[in-house]
Structure formats: C-alpha cells, structure tokens
Amino acid sequence: MKALFETDPKRVDKLSFEKSGIYFDFSKTHMDSGLLEDFQKLAHDKGLSDQIKALTTGAIINISEDRPAEHMAERGIGAPTSVENANLLKNRMQGLVQAIDAGALGDIEYIIHLGIGGSALGPELLLQALKLGDEKYETAVISNIDGCALEPVMERFDAHKTMIVIASKSFTTAETFLNARSVIDWMKEQGVADPFGKIVALTAMPEAAVEWGIDESRILPFSPAVGGRYSLWSSIGFSVALTLGIEVFEDLLAGAAAMDQHFKDAPFDQNIPVIAAFCDQYYNQIRDCETRAMFTYDERLRLLPDYLQQLEMESNGKSVMADGKPLDRHSSPIVWGGVGTDAQHAVFQLLHQGTHIVPVEFLAVIEPGHSLAAEHHQGLLLNCFGQAAALMAGNISDDNNRNYPGDRPSVTLLLDDLDGRTLGALLAFYEHRTFANAALLGINPFDQFGVELGKEMANALLSGDSNQMDPSTETLKNRAFPA
Image 1 (cartoon, one colour):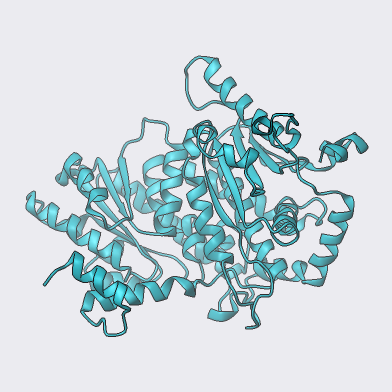
Image 2 (cartoon, one colour; image 1 turned 120 degrees about the horizontal axis):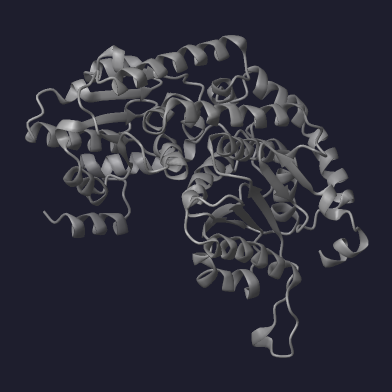
C-alpha cells in the first residue's frame, strides 16, 4: 500500500468520496485502477446494474420467497403502489405518535419495546445513537428471553405509566411473546386494569395481532416484503419516532433516501456502496480474509457492529446461489468489532502482529456528542486515525517482538455529525453494500432459512420430543432439567 501512495500522489482523491455528510476513505486498501476495472467488469458480467434496477423498481428479487424487497419503498424509492402504501402507513404511525403524546393511552412515561433480531437491533441502535437526554419517554428495548434482561426494567419502571410495543413481523416470534406475557403479568400484578389497552403492535400480520387481543387502532402494519433486518424504516421504527420525535425519524428516512438515489444512479467507479463491495470481494476471495472488523470511535454507535453482524451475515451467509447451485467461493466474511479506544487495549494486538490479515473499518464523528473538554474528542479521533496509519505503515525492527509487518488494510468513514440524516445515509450505505456483495456472489440476500433449524430443535426439546437428539444434547438437557 505504501508503494501505491508513492506512485500516485492523487490516490487519496481518487479513492475518497463524500456523500450525505460522510467522508469515505478507501485509500488505505490495496485497491488500484486495475483492480477497479476488473471488478467493474465482474459487476457487469454479474448483471449488477439490472439487479439494482430490479431492487429499486419493486421487481421480484427475493426469488426463493417470490417477493420484491420493499425496504427502499419506505424511503420513497420503489414501485409507486409500494411507496404510496408506505406513505399511508407513515401517516398512520404519525397519528398514533401524536395521540399518545396527547395522552390517548393515559399518563405514559415508559416504553418497553419487545422484539428480536431486526425488530430490536435497529430500534435499539437508533435510540442509543440519537438520544439527546431530554426525551419525553424512557424506552427499554428487550430481545433476550433471559429474565436478567427484562426483570431490572420492570423493577425500574412504573407499571401504571408503561406502554408495551410488540414488534414481530410474523406476530408469532416465541421469544418476543414469552417476554410480552411476562410484562402483561407484571402489569396485572401491579394493578393495571387493562394491560392490553396499552399495547401497540408492529407487524406484517395485523390479523394475528387482532386475534391476540390488540385493538386495530393500535396496530401498525408494514409490508411482508420488508425483511426483518431491513425493517427499522417501517413501523418497526415506531418506538424511535415516539421516543425521539417524528421529525428525527423523518430525517432518518431522508438521509437513507439520499444514499438510495446515489446507489441507484452513480456509475460503478463513483458508487460508494459498490466500491466498498469491490474491496470486500477482493479481501474475501483473493486474499482469503475470512473476517472483517468494524470499530466505532464513538460510544453512541457501540451497537453498530452488532447491527452489521445481522445485516451482513444473515443476508450473505449462504452456501447456495440464487439459481440453486452450490456457492463455489467464500460467502459473507465473519463480521466482528467493538468500540475504540477500548478495543485498542484488547484485540488490536492481533490486528497489528497476528498471523491473520483482518481488513478493518474505522468509523468516527467530527462533532463530539458531549460537552466535556476538547481533549476527550481530540484524543479519540487521533487514536482512530493513528491506528489506521499504523496498520498500513508497520514498523520493521531487529527485535521480532517489536516488529510490525504493516500493509494491513483499513477503510475509514468520517461523519460530520451524528444526526438522523447522517445515520440514515450510513445505514442505507451498509444495506446497499450488502446487496452489491450478494449480486457479485450470485446469491439471494433476502431470505434466511438458516435460522430455522435451531429453532425447530429447541421447540422439539421444549415439547419433550427429543427422540432425534444426539447423546450429548440429551445429557445436557437431563443435567439442566433432572427428572
């Protein structure tokens, strides 16, 4: 990489891009003009342009489930009817937010948002990233069925001033409804006369919510063609709109729409999500890098690595292509990461001197999210930039213990500020990067059948039908639950 900089003084300009308040620097990768040309040819051979068009016009692109993928319609791009329906549902969500703010459900101070996967990760990320501290409601997002997650919230909240939000695309999610029953039981024990009167349902199956006992006026549906990990833009974002304000949610959608337009219209050599996918494929396929690390140098974005794990590994962790043939190359890399500067004192030893080559993504925000002395933020950002520089430069030493090989790749994303528009654009960038990677691999990123088998086995154990279990599993069950 150092040689690439030495031979091309304009390298930073050629491989850096700015969009929607985000500066993307790909210059500390091994990407050069020759590789960019090769990958553009691959993209054309794989029909990436046609696939982008199919995605953005509402064509059937989720082939295994015979559906379009309509998350972009929530932001204004897609089939006209899908966009119109999304806008109608947004108006309905806004009306319910206004009604609750006006006291339609009584004196509400606390919100318990129950979901799992995309029904929880997206809302929780947004609430942590954009919270200012002066919100009208205190909101807790609960996904785990471990009672250690839910019980402290119920101990802290006043049941009489609590509202429940149940987020479930199918409205059958076992973990979510176990938690919901526990919260309802707690409200009854605390003397709340009608807990069901303080429940809002977010689902693609509104009839199931009605059958469960929730009034239709408090059910916010969304399209079944919006995948769970792409659903924060839909009514799944209701708790965000309620807690942070509908204006913040609208800014989020507007920021994502700007990145949508860029992905739709920009040529491949200027298309930021596509160039990111080119880098991903280079390191994953050619350099055999099986993982990619993401470090956010901003505490407000500490959940972003978790969010990206689901987005990328659930979308592209496949061993079969869209045409049903086996995938003959690596699928999604293993995505992991953490928060700087904490990670520097934990995992960066391996990144700098380990035998694994791990492409790293750094993310930082120019405007601080606090009012403490400037040294805090200055130190944070300079650590971010310094780590990326050190990974590339290395330091050759006669003492092998102090030898840094260098030539280790990284990408840096530098946000002007962390607000609804910028975060919306950032998350849309990651969605489109994931889609571009899927197109280059020839896989369908919109199904997730791999999550089902483990659930089936757990249900079999729960029902006592464990005839097909291996001796190890039987022993574990009997040890945990002796007869």
